Image: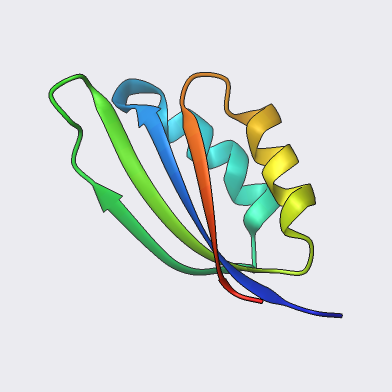
Length: 80
């Protein structure tokens, strides 16, 4: 099994951040290497950066996009 380190940046409305992160916790449990919470912007978007150890990045991205309705997801593969 080929494991990859992936950095996922989530831009979420500040008031919805807790609900979305609690849903993601069950899916990402045991794969999180590092988390950074950035303060909300003037428009009310909060940024969360997650560093994950995953075996199938494409499947993870699909799951994240289904879970996150209000917000943006960007992905960067750090190791192949």
